Length: 277
Picture 1 (cartoon, rainbow, N blue to C red):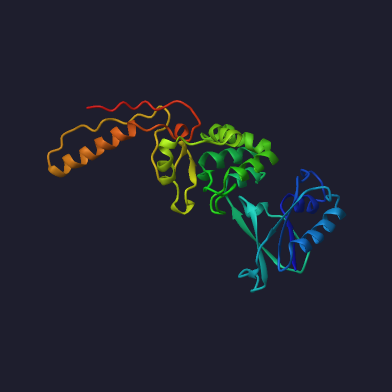
Picture 2: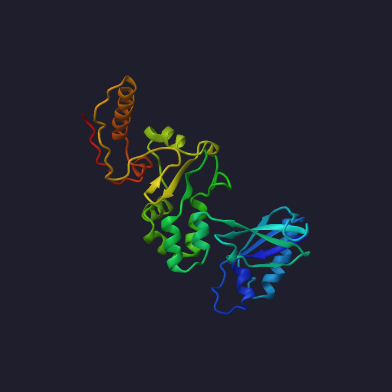
């Protein structure tokens, strides 16, 4: 059986408990065995290092053959943001640990990067976040895009990191509100919100966190205070006239839309577009 302790508990023990924050839990990944057996092995290890009182997060995985170590058995272990954050201790049979970088927003919060780097990564990063799960689902709708549950857990464990990110990113306050209150989309805009999400979301509502604030991957919503000019100018050919008419229809439709925050039921001010000939 393969049992690997990783994350903050592994880092704490490997550092010999010096100048490292005490872990909040013990992350364990295992393969080729039962969850009960993995829990027994990991619990004994935790007790021996004074961590027996901590909750244990056990996740099952499968082994593969490593291309980096001559085809030996390997376990892929998720690591927040960068492989340099990877810390692991193999408790069961020997196995190669291969790090799989995960760069969701919750991963950035857990990365323990310096404040300046947190600000820089948050300001230039692009993240997707599920704010309304697929009907019948709880938490995340898929490993592909994280939801508010994972984000809340990370922010609770690393409040300082989240505070730094929240204050430096244009979407920080909106996401803070979503974590605190969730959202109840306006039924009038439900289909547009779902249509602006990836097709694989299967009815979930997904937003994108960008340099402009909160947006959607496949749908255009006005930003607060955004204006769009009414298309003018000469249109001398029939094709040019057709393109201008389509552009005017787009501006007119855009002017009827709420902001994304309003469509999600989060409140906030509208935009300032007033189209007209």
